Length: 450
Image: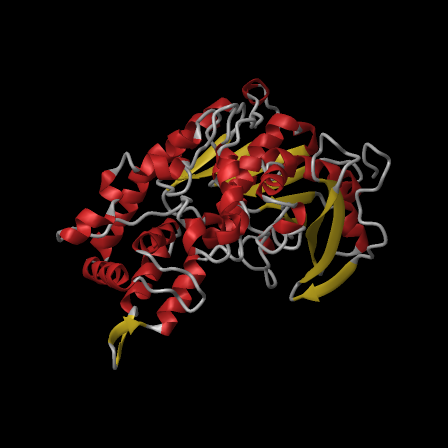
């Protein structure tokens, strides 16, 4: 395949590398794509993707296998690094050649972080660069590499969370590239501003927090004790992360996973150790907190999270922070002054993240410029979605903490032919937790078997 300028999208001189894991053969692919698809002759960045096939498939089998492209959630996360036939992958390779794509800026695809972004120049140049990291650019990347891999045939896309947002844009912008679309926990609102997204999100987070404290009432006192310690001592974690009360509250993001409440309970239980100086935060607790809170492994999540909701000339303007002020119950100070449970938050990015996290501090001005941006192109074409003829199935989790169920259902009704599976059996990570069962259900739906 060649691009609009007659150049191959495959990285020149890059031999394919194949290797084995239990039951699988994996092949690394690298491609060159434009930073700005509106300027195909301009600067290029590298994309990395891993092809996965079952090891019992011979050459003749592979020739007839359709492709399945997996788009990871986030934004800002590379594709899963599976070991063998984990989660849904074992089911997928029974009938697909699977492509695990690191979306631009993530994983091994020209990473965008505090170390690499200064190569772009100053904050304005960095912000201009990152404006090309939304779903529209990701889908155009996919369409540029698809013919090289499939010979021009369309493929099935499996989009998890933000990957589902990308899939809905795919249906809007390039449905001819799709045989079918499978979406898990990732139907976006077609017209909501970021403010609308967070006004819907904070009540969900409050419900999840209340449910956690009802399940583990002992955590009410534990959370208050930790927050009081943070307020009194203002500790800095061994990593350099400034562990504030607001940062502690944001551990509520764990409550969106199926096992998240249990994991949070175990984390809080081991917060303190006795020392000659009195109770201190345990080193082990600090390490686990850092792993949960740091953006070092996925800085794009913090940088472009609100921009995925950018629309027209209205800036996102630190939406989560502004909208939180409309919900005073999330202010920790009244709770700590009295005896109320500490409110938790999650699935939101705030200016203070760029003050407490060493991985983000150098990027604060860049983040401010993205938040002020007013030239976001529309991502979803309602008319085209209303006329959709690509088979689509979506798993909608009944009280998903990360993606509003009401927004998802309205979008489902707006996409012609989309079939839904609404379930409270799983949380947002249902594709990981449910694995083959979730994928089986979605495939049956798009094939009209249920």
